[in-house]
Length: 130
Image (cartoon, rainbow, N blue to C red):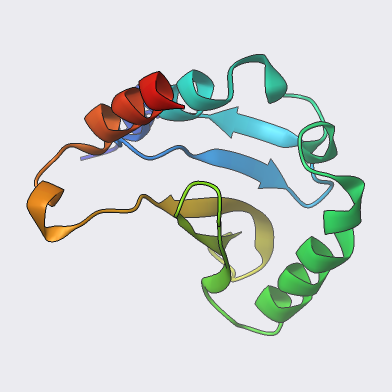
């Protein structure tokens, strides 16, 4: 079965975590529904990632890309002290293995008492609190 672009978009929109795909020129090329909801106007398809990321993060991102070019997969970036999220740099590869872009993957904080809470509900609640 061939998967169409429409189906791929629907899959990514069903994914409760934000996906902001950025190409090698650091241009935002795709955002799923969760990303649009979370980032609003701060991030837009066609704009530079550095419109929302501080330009001082460029060397860090370039270093991650260099490691990805050498074959490394997903890499831990940081624990966000504000949100409690763990953040990962995730390279995206073409069929031939070339890194064609990347996205940042976030893991929302959780505890055993709320482990079954859907991510979208968590972020809705977090937005209302803070």
